[in-house]
Length: 75
Image (cartoon, rainbow, N blue to C red; front, side, top):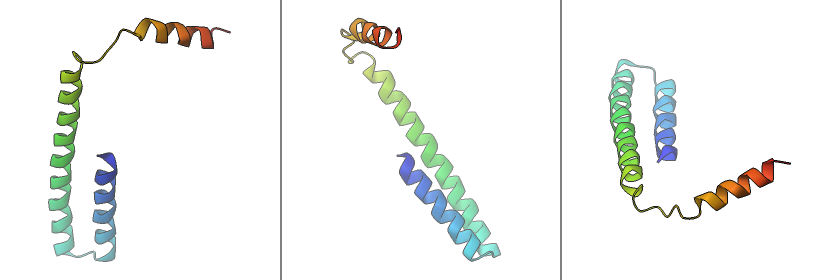
């Protein structure tokens, strides 16, 4: 998810640097708008997935994990 966004931004800037013209600037602005919409949609999907999974996650081992953490870093 994040890797595709970073790759797309990198290619947008590379295109802008190689050809600094009015057409290139307009294309960059359009690509940036699309990138913003894509990122917002991906963040919404991640939030809703986490929100829906909160009822399905097995938390029965949470107290033991906390005790292991305390015992490890207590020393």
